[in-house]
Amino acid sequence: MAFGDGCRYIPCKQVGKGIEVRAVELFDVSGEIALVTGGGTGIGFAIARVLAVNGAKVVLAGKDQKTLEAAVAALTDLGGQAAAIPIDVRRDDMIAPSFDRIETLFGPVSVLVNNAGIAHRDKAVHLSRETLRDVMAVNVDGAFMMAQEAARRMIRDKSGGSIINVSSVLSGLPMRQVAAYSTSKAAISQMTRCLALEWAKHKIRVNEIRPGWFETSLTDRFLKGPGANVMAGQNPLGRLGATHDLDGAVLLLASKAGIYMTGSAITVDGGHSLGR
View 1: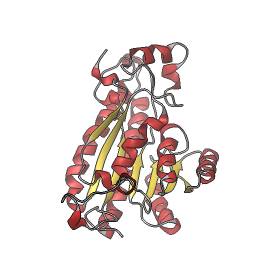
View 2: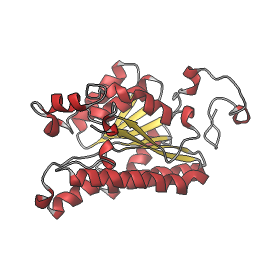
View 3: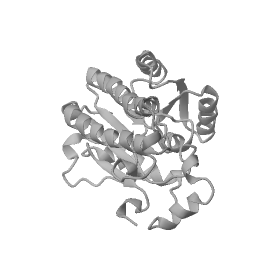
């Protein structure tokens, strides 16, 4: 049973009135239809995995069909329901048709995870306009257009839903030689708040997860050689993030456990952003 104000599985009139809800029900995502961009590898796959093993129907989106198919096979082996759809988030002509296909496969998207992103490392004085635009096109423009299409359909169906933007601790922390990436993530942070404010009346929640340093293909260029040990040694918890460290934040924002959260940012970084 679903309700238009975002409450699921228990009558909305009981929410906030002292009713005891078990954690297994509170964080339940069964029945959700989740679209995860950049879902074939790294953090995106980890997000798709925790949603799938907890009952959500998950669609992985990305540009590499073979990678997506391998990820779908892995989720299926875990007992999840998953499908793959090729999407280049820079191409407007692919976005709406992809949502149409998902509706045919599973139904309307109720959870969108904007995870697709690219990174770039170079001195700011060497950064070209082309590189800057490429980073922004994927990390910001693509996330916005995906959120816009998801919201249009949630508004159409009067269903509400959850949009989760994957940002970074670098959205608020300056760091040398990552000006393009950090700027794009700062834009995601402000975009999250703006969309949360505008779409709250439609019961669409828009929140942000800010991971710290995780070992993924996106961070390989930053963490090669001794870099990983240096970053781990500077972290208050003494290690880099493992992809399963994001599971709790994802389930919180995707489930009714987070029904009163919008415009929020959850930092998952082992204390990195506390300073060194």
